[in-house]
Length: 111
Image 1 (spheres, helix red, strand yellow):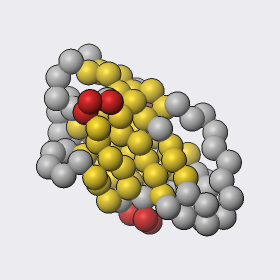
Image 2: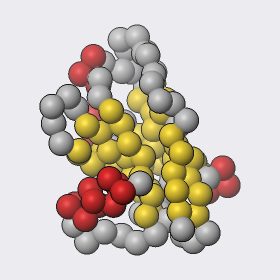
Image 3: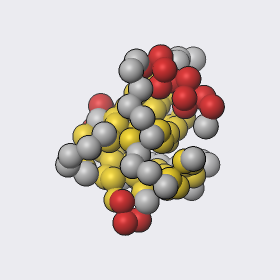
């Protein structure tokens, strides 16, 4: 079994200041990690994912996350935040690669 813990329930950031959203995971097997964003009155949108390879992952809108296996972390960061970044952010973990975005959304909602 695997789980994620988001350590920041709410973060206040000034315009153009850096932002960090922390995510730690627990798993006994190899994992795939994801960050989602949900803007006001919109559905979930995949922001970025780590499947394998380079541990620094670049996402949309200037976001990035680094997979650190030794720290079991996948923290999301952006060097310069903007008002348009105001949203809810969700970290998700899976031990399989979902076949479709719909399946991934379903998995996230179960976390």
